[in-house]
Length: 115
Length: 112
Image (cartoon, rainbow over all chains, first blue to last red; front, side, top):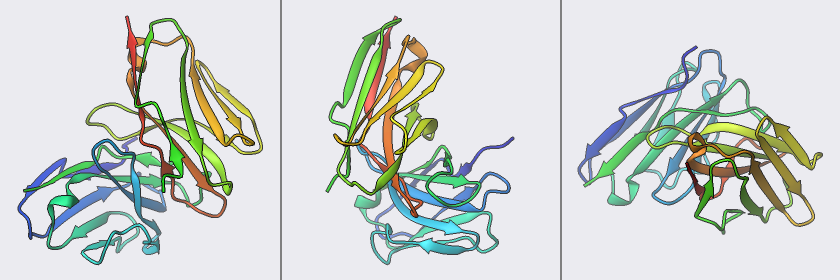
């Protein structure tokens, strides 16, 4: 079956612009996660959705970052007024249900470059 | 405050030998640990996990050992194969939570 997909695979934007990153989880997975991986670091948690609601957004770095999952499937991570420090690979993962004992399946990521 | 640490950024091993990747953690509330493997331009792929009620879990060539008193876990790959060359991330999670805390990764290179 299809895994987690993310679009676009690469996004180059200018400082101050708005970007949207899309994640299609594995069909039927109710839990969805966003992580950010900076160069030389491991993935860093941003936000977790259970169904349509954000159960934990404590990892979002500031109010320029926002994510939605309106129908409990596809999710969009939105970044306003992008800064050079936002450059990273943004990873999406999904699992069959929430909870730490349910394996998270990761997508290939979106590489965001802010010039 | 790095709660999960992988102190070796890289490791080179000869094909057929054992690879040992190490991971240390500081949070005693962590009770579930995982290893992910990552190839370039791909997302991390789940490899193996262990619950804190165990001290060893084995899956084929991969074995994870957990030493709770030392807050240390290790991944053993034997025999190592060139296709194992990748970046390996250790991750941890606590009961009732859902987010994984990742280490910075160890780049394994298996030499043919």
